[in-house]
Length: 444
Image 1 (cartoon, helix red, strand yellow):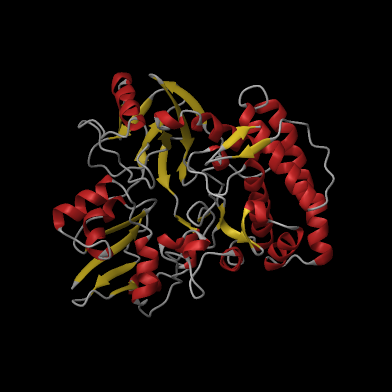
Image 2 (image 1 turned 120 degrees about the horizontal axis):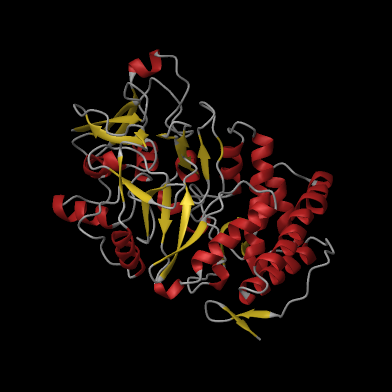
């Protein structure tokens, strides 16, 4: 038997308890005092407040998403001889550093995540050490011994959580304080040196189209182009107090295991798809607005050649109370220009499993799955989607035409294709034709 308390920053009592019995069966039960306090803030949409314990599947689906694939996980697996399926055992060692405001701690442990005072709780990051950190991340090497990344960020280890200040300096939380960072510094690998600028441009294109996005800054640090991204799950007061905001990605909100983040990995019983997304958005603070914004984001991703918009690349933010809103979009990148390119979509559009399969009927099915049929669907395409695509096309001429011809040509090709499929007849700026070849795009 192993039990952990589950906490949120600034909540005085544990939210509940994560348990694993002697047979390896897990459960989660909300704390009686937390329920009695009258709060309506749940740990997740998939785990609404209840006096009944959640079963093994629901528990594993949510808490398994808190375990990030990184070097820290590998060390714990090897050092403590744990299995990857032992999520409670893993969180006993990793739970203090869960993503966001959540922590999973031994029952007798004090809270570890607390707000931070920018003037007192952080230490300056020396420029020389910053250059070394960036160089090591670019080469996928371990961080210097003097540096401990305070946030076990998901994905390939090419980023570190830091604090950025208005005067251009950086800092890290003082050891042992458990205070939040404010930014993510992302360092593309040497082979993908264009990614920093392309991710920034993608966000700028999204911003120009009216989508909710944080536009990152591209910084030259040492010999590398890096991306500085302000965290949307942080709140900074006028007097410099930094607090974490509770958030969850769509896999957590749906109660789906993290390895099903692409629809193609699912099955008839469990999959991440349009129906799952709609059910999540219907529970958000402004369902109609959330659905509209998600649909526009989907067409935007198609327009820039980003088909990696999987279930962990969309999130909900609990910054306005116990009912979440759709979080700003993130991780925007033209995957079609990457060596990691795949034809397959993260989730199907109608019956289409890849972008080049999409037909008008698929878009009609896709929109109907979100409650837009016939006249409403036609109006949404001819007004909202047409405006978005035209805006992105125009913005691309200003942002990337002279800086990244391949990206600009890709955007032109994808917008033209979508315009044709939806019969929008948009006046798209002429570019060179590009053809997909061997995992990328080439000029033909």
